[in-house]
Amino acid sequence: MDRIQAQLGIQLVAPIAAYVQAANAQEADAITACFTSDAVVRDEGRDRRGAKEIRAWAEEVNKNYRPIFEPLSIASQEGKIVVVGRVSGAFSGSPVQLRYLFSLKGHRIAALEITP
Image (tube, rainbow, N blue to C red; front, side, top):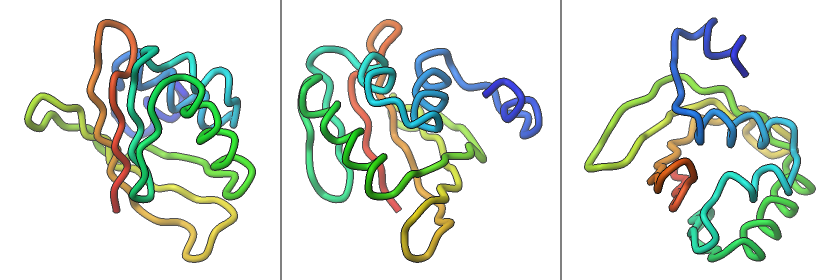
């Protein structure tokens, strides 16, 4: 992950860098560990709440799409950290550019919304 950040000149805060690393490794347990116990993930129009649902979401995404996320830019917007990235994987139209809107609480992710 540090190599990707250095190549792109992007500095991700620790919880987001850990999430990207875990997501690219497709490790559901590591992905889940990036979130608070009461976190919410909104992806493909559905909300997943809490560690159990977030872990199930991570397993489903990894199994169905095998995504790799390459951060392209980072910005702050209305108290959220917005990371735009290129996502490639086993899905129609790959790669696509998506926006990841992160809300942090301490050193963990409290909310994540993924949008086109």
